Image (cartoon, rainbow, N blue to C red):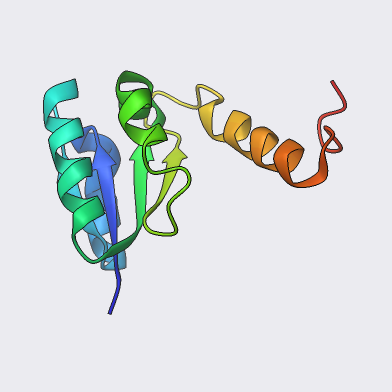
Length: 105
């Protein structure tokens, strides 16, 4: 059975425990990269990562973009959204359709 993990700042991720997700609080870029790599090689199908943490390890996240598993999905942290998640959606739509049909920019 596949699992779901959440990586990010402690205050932002602890609430996901009540949903049955595996939670991995991190304090710096090195910890985030290490945990992401470990989860990607384990039985995790979905890895949510706070945008504040994702911003620090963009290159590492991009390594998993073309793979089937895991899906690495940025989510807003407690500081609010940085727009990283929406940028990802925009890129995926443009790649699939060939044009920006959602944001019309």
